[in-house]
Amino acid sequence: MSDLYQQIVLDRTRHPRHAGRPAHFDARGEGANKLCGDKVSIYLTREGMDLHHDAEGCAILTASADLMADAAAGKTPAQMRELAAAFTQAVTSGTPNPALGALNALTPVADFPSRIGCATLPWRALEEALQDV
Amino acid sequence: MSAILEKVNIEALREDFPILKEKVHGKDLVFLDSAASAQKPRAVIEAMTHVMTSQYANVHRGLHYMSERTSEAYEAVRDKVAGFINAAARDEIVFTRNATESINLVAYTWGRTALKPGDVVAVTEMEHHANLVPWQMLRDAHGTELRIIKITDSGEVDWHSLEDVFADGRVKLLAVTQMSNVLGTYTPVERLAKFAHAHGAKILIDGCQAIVHRKIDVRAVDADFFVFSGHKLYGPSGIGVLYAKADILDAMPPFMGGGDMIAHVSYQKSTWAKPPHRFEAGTPAIIETIGLGAAIDYVNAIGMEAIAAHEAALTGHALAVLPNIEGLRILGSAQDRGGVISFVMKDAHPHDIATLLDRQGIAVRAGHHCAEPLMGRLGVTSTARASFALYTTREEIGALAKGLERVRKMFA
Image (cartoon, rainbow over all chains, first blue to last red; front, side):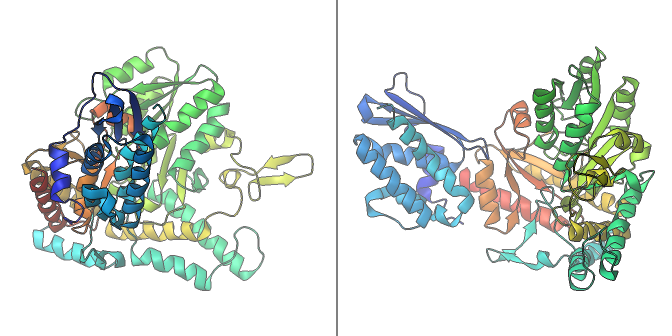
């Protein structure tokens, strides 16, 4: 059962590095899970050089948002969208992708069909934020 | 009843439920999600198989042997249900798809004829969406008003709020759960019915949860409407019940049109059958209805009092054990409560709790439990919920506590 809840996932849930709504931001996207009421907002600041999240949800959602903020920072909108597509593919298929680095810790979620949506919610919020860029 | 005897009985009863022998992720299944839907005893499974293998045809239509036998078996369930909830007459029992459909039927037919625009429907803060959304839809379509009666922090009906809501005399229906599917609270339905009637209102009781755990007597309570689903009562899904007093049903127009619900049909117009058939258009859930009959026989054979006593002991045990887990908080502390326990943990989200318990073979529900506004009232977005049934054991509550302790350590 620890496959999904690897140390990095637990660590990012307990001590997220990019949590909190910044005072100023360039773009914001939101994701909400109708089934469970979980919510996440993603903020882009300094023209995408930094990402922040405000998550009200489970460990999988929070870790996904926090690791995403690491991985997507400094990328162009097109690259961020590519990353989102690669992440979604990896957590749906369960196949790690070297390009995803630490985000591969979340690929075991593929074995938990009802939880895949938790992992991808921050990425849908990111895609929404990118529409504002 | 000695602890040993009780254990022997429960172990014997568990033999009746084939699914309880299944393994989940290589572990023994610990099924603590019966409030969502209960497992089925062999008697129900076999009754349904028997219909399909040796006694099946459409009901109320054929003049042949199979149709007559099937109609008899189907209609016999109406008598069983009437007896089970102590209705005055079998014709007060309408078969529906589930309790949700029963409430929608009332809202759509009685609501649009007996209620006038400006009349008020009152519900409590702890209703399932099934006993809230149909009244919102009626409000939007028909101009009735919807009022919400508050609950106390312990999860009980707030009597002051109830009196406020009824103060102007416009409430014509009190629609209330008999047992919260989130908090486990039993509401004082007898007292609520007296109150509603004294204020010129009818009462609809959502008995989905309560009927599984307590003897129901619609006449003693003086319920105008009482609804429940078969699948929580160890019966199949796809069959529900609406009970309503005969004079109320008699005045209600049909819900859906079609076969079986008519008296006479011409190309120009039709006249309606008498209740209950007026509300049972089309081929009903024949097999499922017969399955419900078998479920009622099954719980009657054990006895609702014995089931209630067993579950009360389990609930007391769980309420004593679970709070020992550091950071765990049980929602609701009603005086009169049953075996539905919602909880949150300090550092673990309900989803993570449910996933981690599932990997240990333990099934609990996590989410808003179709009571999203209540989550807001309780100041949470979701909870984890363990719910008990006649087949639940003390050992399973022990397994839950142990599993939760592992979850706590992981997130500590």
